[in-house]
Image (cartoon, rainbow, N blue to C red; front, side, top):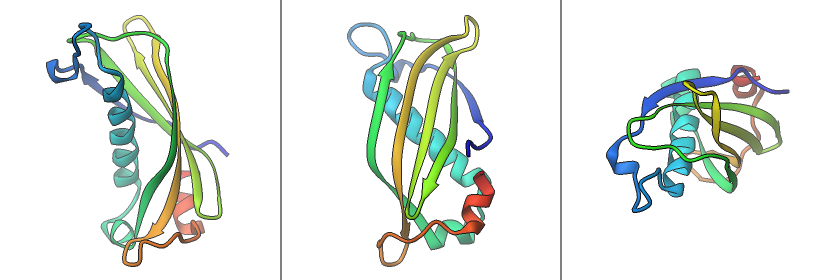
Length: 131
């Protein structure tokens, strides 16, 4: 049930660098979340975004290689599956110049009604946008 891969490229800024002179591990997680949000915003209407929101249930992240100031990176994200109120999203961050995988991650998300903040079933209207 894997969806199309949503991709974004960017340059590693100085704010991402830690005292070991590479990208801080927490920053990779933020980049994954940013990619998820950008994918959601690209596929949905404003009305859909007012009606429903997502919250994180858990993250799993595996650090494969370091990246450094000025590196050109690409985030990739896709929906692997969904059931009921939950959706599993995967991520990969790569460095295109050498095709190194920097990070692989996945997040389990829960779909909520934006007014009540109660879990709500993922509708066909939403799933068809991604799968």
